[in-house]
Length: 77
Image 1 (tube, helix red, strand yellow):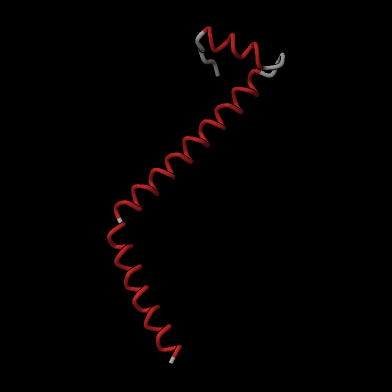
Image 2 (cartoon, rainbow, N blue to C red):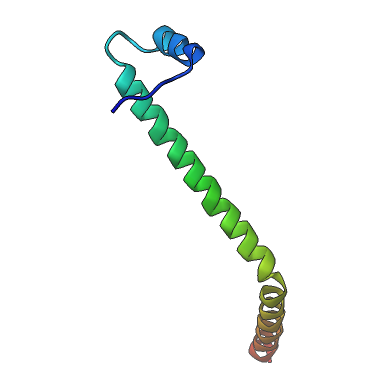
């Protein structure tokens, strides 16, 4: 495979990659970037889902709190 990189990027690679290790550095950078991007997408989906289901989740939590309170009252008797 061949890719064309901006000259500034090639200069940066030359400064930070040991001789003969450009491909390894590029592979590591791509893997890191994809991992971060994927985690960010998962985080965003979780945030969206939590927002969409917030009212339902609050209702369930309130229902359980009521049931739990009732159970504690019965235990104390």
